[in-house]
Image 1 (cartoon, one colour):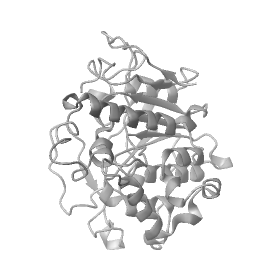
Image 2 (cartoon, helix red, strand yellow):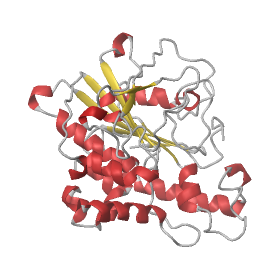
Image 3 (tube, rainbow, N blue to C red):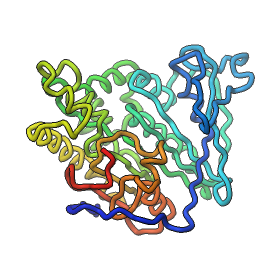
Length: 347
């Protein structure tokens, strides 16, 4: 059973000794999603991992969907994590339809085949709108690696800011429903959606938390905000759904919301918690659902693990994920109290 916080957690004053962070990225899955939106490599900030173009890929016809050369970011692990892999997948809503096709292995991929190298441990991680599509990829990775001759391979997934609600905006429209309906119509994906979901629901509904979670057998850890600012800006209060500038400031900064607006956002929180109930019953799943006004919390050390990181039950996101991944605790399912109860939130 998930732990729901009703009082503010205390900020940990000292970082626990012996903490080691290992980050690695495998080019196999990452190259499919990177650099599809621009033919120019981004200008790298100091200290960030640099992109690597896949040598000879263009000559073989292995290019991104817009014709640009494929690339990946690889940061090697160290110590005990040197033989483990963390695969990070990210894409924006502009690429949802195409990522779904890649994830589900449909024919837009053509006849190219990629050699896949198996490693002792793998955690697939992804962030940004369209996460459900990457989670379908997670199912594929599990199917691929869960073979009798690969039983030593441990595959787990981390979904960061990726469960989206089929909620009405202020004008009564349903943005995410229209997005996922577009996916269904583009590729006719019914044949690869879970049969048990299709027996009860419309294909589009199988992309939302209640239907999606039931279809994933891979152990998964959910990192999500109860007040996900991306969804507040695009699902709850998108531009044009409200009169004048009544939501202009609230949608950008929760501290600027009126009491009536906060009540509406509390309703969004309750709907999210209700939709995630399916994950509570899965013993090998974990959750870190905080009340911070944020979206995607594993990419930055400031939210992942630092003296100022958000905490639930005295744990940062990194510590909670570590407890779950390495089995240090029997259950790691933390659900925060309502905003603004958590003083460790930076927003």
